[in-house]
Length: 183
Image 1: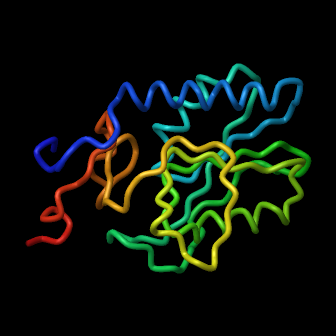
Image 2: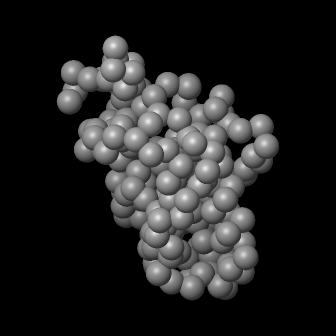
């Protein structure tokens, strides 16, 4: 599995340090508020979201939503499909959408619009990784809590996958192109 990685983009230590910083920012921004809900976008967010939640020193709830826009490929299809909706009502709650990576931004724009209709008290976006070079020009997103801006490379690890593999790597690595192009 490690042999499939061209190089490590973000080490385990870099991830741990930045996530602790994000948790401190969120704790400070939400101090004194109740009804905080972290909403994770499955499956890629799970490792990041669990580690992030443990660094937030406030009571909070956790829920998950599942969407699909990639299939087993490396590029978004542009069509967002809802696979699993939230289990809780978010009306009147302070929502933080937690993403592993923002690529085209289409999925997050879709979720933001859908959640806005449910009348949360507030809504912010937290992402571990952001690929500005891949953003769809029609999408405008405000990222409130950002781990890292990264170059336009295909990354895996720390929850991110290729065809459901590599999620368990403790770092973010760039996958060798021959793995996903089958050359």
